[in-house]
Length: 101
Image (tube, rainbow, N blue to C red; front, side):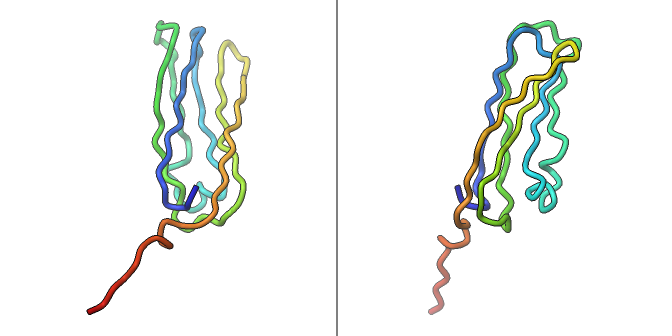
């Protein structure tokens, strides 16, 4: 992955889950606060299966490194956690060329 690139987190939740919280790396949230508090609340939604797609951008000036996007699913006071590893190495700005004539 390069900083500045877009990504999608696909959420498929079954068994009448109450809510899903996406926790982006704190280094990214410090740069881009739109990545904070991504919560999908399903209380009152009686469908068994839920499908969501959360679009995010790796902040342009995020440092290269290994990060984890953590998903927390809640149901009846219990929590299940899934971690999605992301490795950033480079920036989309490296692919931009300026030419003067």
